[in-house]
Length: 135
Image (cartoon, rainbow, N blue to C red; front, side, top):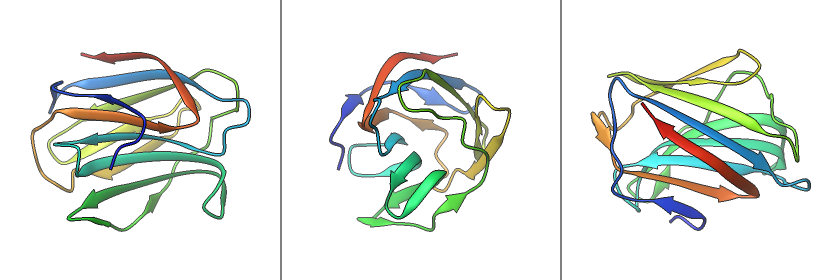
């Protein structure tokens, strides 16, 4: 399922915050941050789209379960710029992921799988990840 960089055997638990800093390529069409229990399923897919899949300048969130994508979720702003550093801060509560974007907008995405801990994070698309920090 995953094609880009994968971080395995990590521990992202309820009550923790995941901070990601990266830079989309100067010609990026989109990139994705994926959090899940294993390499086959994604509980939280964050997909900033500059110009991809028929969308422009929108963040699409979703889950991938049982071999299928679930219902897309779209809200929040679009503070991403090709070639410029971004920061995403994800707070993990028992019921949802609160994604804080650098323009102050917030995306609330349900913890559809209901687990209290996830062990895989991956990155896909045209992006260079600089730092990953879990606290």
